[in-house]
Image (tube, rainbow, N blue to C red; front, side, top):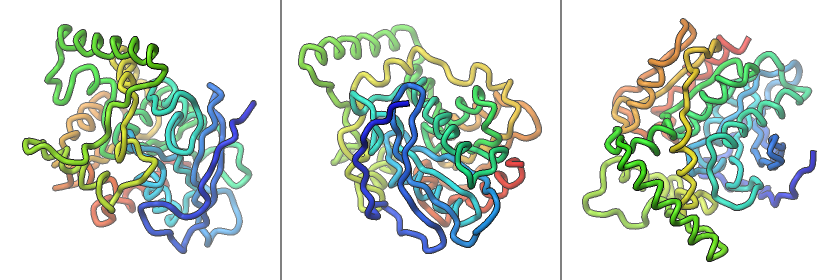
Length: 326
């Protein structure tokens, strides 16, 4: 396998403080499309022998590993797990060109590539590997687990179904052939312009200045991505956003078609005050078996589960992994 030469930042540049309870290192691995992914590895300091359970973490959609996914990975490492928080293909410090492209297939593969890496470490128990996805990556984590039988337990936190929201709009408000075809036409026209220009138009991340009629969830995104709380220079949502045409393949793709066949454990964590709560509830309804759980965090909005240590149920998440990673 050929690997790309990545430029990695080795100083601590996360939006959260470094824990003195874990070891931290940069690592890389390659997915089956030949894209080299960059990750932060977190390992508990107080465990000196034996094989560790491991969890691969990514998300939110449009974020980087220096934001929420790194916080989740570090918190789980404090609780005894070896973890990696990785940047998806085409984003952050990971490789792949063109930049800022999302793909329902490649991004699902990114989780399986992270599992490839973890299973080949000599300090990981190969029978105890899980994944965790945040926001849009929550849905992608579940989709990966449906197809990848090596994933023994999956957590989706404040999840989106990116195929549903792109096809149907928020709250299914654009769920008609005419509305979908209008969006397809706009993105296909942009493809022509991008090719002519030799560059890809960006869709724009969270706006610098909120419109007066901004919905509450956009205000919540702004409070995270555009303030000292969560801003990062490599984050798409904090800056120029995805390529405008990135949503197009999600409209022609459907997650969870075989969700009822997923035999391994899943925990969906969602705030009941989140605009995205319906994604978590509806996806949970597609799952089967007594090893599936929906944990509702009372009063939490979507971005509360990005970084609020007083809200995110890390102990419950760790207990879920301890129960099912065996």
